[in-house]
Length: 109
Length: 115
Image: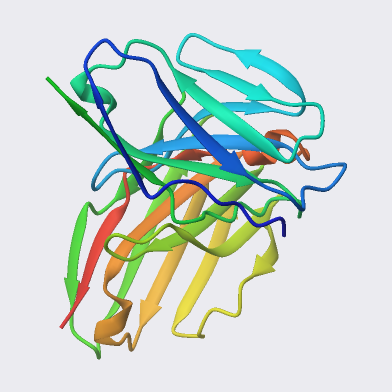
């Protein structure tokens, strides 16, 4: 399984853009990059998934450079309700999501 | 309907009890999962069912017994648990294709306390 490294925590303020970078130097050719969000005492929620270049949905954007050894999740104009743990996952084995430690994002007023 | 439901929300059981956790989804997903999450830790995969057949068991102790009676329902039978098994148990589902299997829909979890 490709190992991922992301910051343990990040602080931000309401209305700012938050960018979380995840390193995955050993990513394999067939791997997808997936991000999840989790609030306390709730199940994780799928945010976005990509393979290369840029993916955008109504919640976030995912930037993946050509070498795919890292990816950046961008959360535009965060609010207090975006305070959560964000997990970067790299898919290697069919069905298996391996969650790393995640990044705790705290948004302040 | 993009919801995965889990019952009960909370469960307290003694080490000699037998109990079951239930998970249900009506999204037509043919892959279903059980995860265990300890406080302030990431979720850990326990079991995967694909087309109602057990496809992955992550070396989980036999005191945890999964069951998939049909494509919408997933159970986790618990027997002779230990206090260290206290955790949030999460169920998830997805389409059983390579890219889609990483887009999993999680339920709210069952908070289990073993006394």
